[in-house]
Length: 325
Ligand SMILES: NC(=O)C1=CN([C@@H]2O[C@H](COP(=O)(O)OP(=O)(O)OC[C@H]3O[C@@H](n4cnc5c(N)ncnc54)[C@H](OP(=O)(O)O)[C@@H]3O)[C@@H](O)[C@H]2O)C=CC1
Ligand SMILES: Nc1nc2c(ncn2[C@@H]2O[C@H](COP(=O)(O)O)[C@@H](O)[C@H]2O)c(=O)[nH]1
Image 1 (cartoon, rainbow, N blue to C red):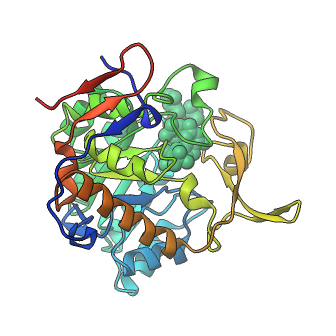
Image 2 (image 1 turned 90 degrees about the vertical axis):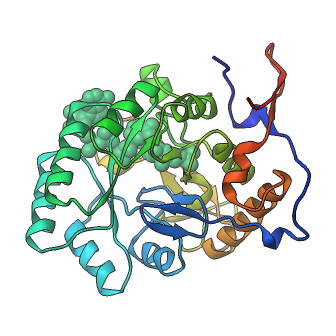
């Protein structure tokens, strides 16, 4: 198996078919809705809050609300009251089952539910998918996180409508160091490996450091990418603003860090500071323009045309041009 990551792959251009990059369509379909970009901000406390989720939904971007210190039922009610789709996260503990029961009792079906645990290839996820399919059958269920084709096959067979791939590639992740496991350092080839067996959409989660990594993810099989660090440093980001030597930063911490958990137990995340870089809306517009540009380099007009390009692996002993077929 080829091992590579975002920083040692480059995609190869094909003859351009558009007069302007504005003719390229960066939108993507997921769960019956079309979104402007194949990008979703990570469901983390320092990345999204209710206000950001409303803005994203109203502006045709996908979002997944985090599940920490939050009443999911109130959140779904609030989103529906604003005329927005509801997209929540759940774990697999008794409190999460109680949330499903309350949603059902209130007649509230979130349009999207993401089951979000560290080791998603597990019976506990199988059981939660089954419970959701029984009690909230209209919700589109995303399940993760996983790292292998076996896991993608199992989650799909258990009823997941999409899977989330990425164990340990995140910027505030220390899973690799603490456990010796994961896709940190080879997330892009893990995605390729998983995509070969997937029959439903994959969300590639973690490790995106520049906008070009979005196109690389799509090339290797992602329908969408989940991004934390690139979104955590905006003026409206929910993390605390911190001043260091006259410069402004936002805190960004892992969901499995002691900062999020409130205790030092099974910690697999850390806290860092991200420089503040302006408004979220501006970053999303720049991302859209960059993805449009990627599509034009692929010789296409639609997002999935990026899947057709060849690529090279830079450096290392296995440097080579990789042709399709
Ligand atoms: N993408 C990634 O690489 C990672 C992401 N995270 C994020 O951190 C947050 C917290 O995750 P998580 O701790 O799973 O959520 P929860 O705190 O909700 O725990 C979920 C349940 O799974 C159990 N559990 C957690 N890890 C394992 C494991 N390795 N093997 C067996 N059981 C396990 C926990 O029990 P117990 O605690 O008693 O073991 C708990 O019962 C999530 O948002 C998750 O996405 C965390 C780590 C890696
Ligand atoms: N191992 C851990 N992974 C975590 C934790 N909190 C979040 N995450 C994952 O990171 C991505 C975001 O990655 P980024 O590279 O874009 O910053 C996020 O979606 C989660 O899957 C954690 O505490 N430990």
